[in-house]
Length: 510
Image (cartoon, rainbow, N blue to C red; front, side, top):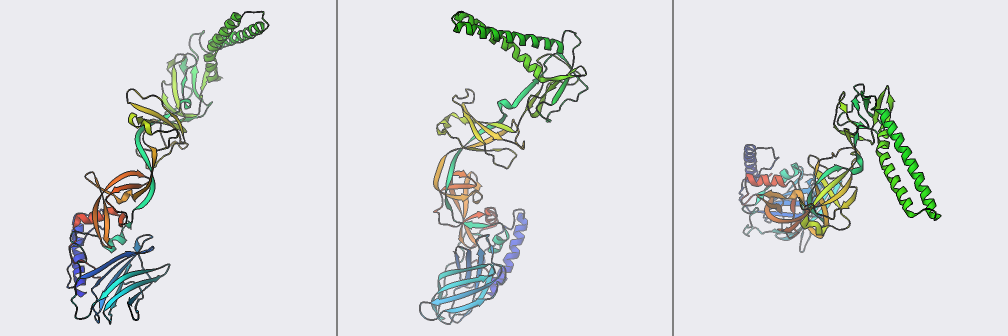
């Protein structure tokens, strides 16, 4: 294996130069050029429940020392086994087993053993790992030891065109290889939506009477949070003596008296009708008069309710709800007429999400609608607290059906007016063959994965994908389901592919 060591050193230096020229921003993703040896190498890759074995050795010949390079990876984190002894037990079909012990790894993850078998034949090989906090056993069904007169032969260790990504590179990066797993995935459709204030959580504060916005009171600014009942604006009385609070109070008192008298008349007419003294027409006329009086009283009551009182001859206008000031329609010192808007308040502690479902998708919506959504610029995925309503009429302009959700927003992180991408659940795909989304790489609109063929070689395979849910993607075509696929670090394998593909006779010579 001496020539292997020299070749390995040369290849390592060459790889570093090529990778440096290619740019090292993507991590240690270089691949080595083909290595050629005097003897053919044998490579073994297998997994237990706890570890992955990648072993390289020249075809053993009885009576001749053969170097075994054994790479051991913990499957829990795909990092190398760094300590502990390794026992190799060669068991022939008949006769006594031959045992070799390696006290510790030569390098993290790599055990070396010079093995000289006395007798030719076929052996099974058991590897027993006994390390601190990690123990495992792996069984290689067959190791063929040739006699001295047999011709050494074997297949190439690495097939032409394979992507080379060495164990040392894998261990240095965030890397993982797994088999696809079957899962139940939710089926979704994606629609556009927008966040908006709830109908009862928005209020426009208007002037209850004519006057001038006082400069003695600091007006609230846009974005300021105000509490219900808090004084927002002070209004100086108008110049005209017959305007202002006196006029409003007089009108309010008159309207209130009219409403009281109208109610008494209605009660009297109803009693007389029940005693069959008055006709039904009188009751109907009294009821109509009462409704008219109460309608005239309502706006005056609202105006008086927004006036918290006189302060130095000024009228104080208070906030009708708790919320945030989102709009100012006037400024200090400006004249204002009764009913003219002053500012607008929105309570965003709870919002509505209005989703726009295309007409051709309305058939998938049931009585219960489950949805999640994301907002541009925010990494989180949000979930509505409840479904408010599903429209029963398409918007004639957009040809979409409105679906309204309530969104809890106590922190104020979400803003009214933001657009959202809404995922609406339409069903479940049971037993889907899945991979983590990060296992897939896209190239010109097609999706690919990297399938492990040996511990250090990979093939690029195109796949067809289906539904996506919770970070997992359904694989429809391209994998049988029993292959080991790069599920973390696919980017680095792709980099290795771009630097160069491997040729024949590649192996380790550490």
